[in-house]
Length: 66
Image 1 (cartoon, rainbow, N blue to C red):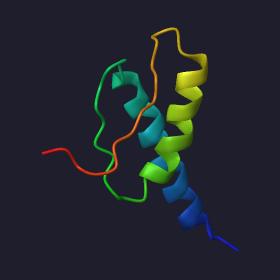
Image 2 (image 1 turned 45 degrees about the vertical axis):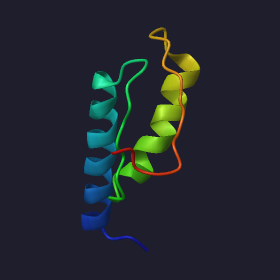
Image 3 (image 1 turned 180 degrees about the horizontal axis):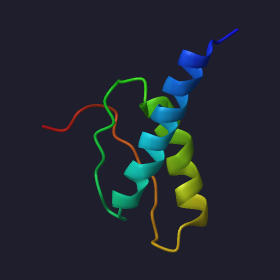
Image 4 (image 1 turned 120 degrees about the horizontal axis):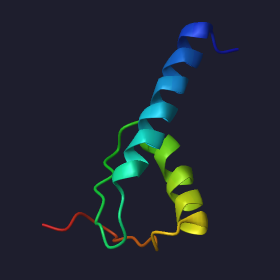
């Protein structure tokens, strides 16, 4: 069972992911990386795409574009 410290970290990661959505605009290329907070961001991006009036549409690339 997660302890209160883990729940606090999870809450902070969720808040960071949610706050980052304010900067997302249609056409942006997002570098998500492999950090643990991205697990909170991906579902939120999906919700944003479904309900957004900003026209945000998800897409992906198979590898890093350089």
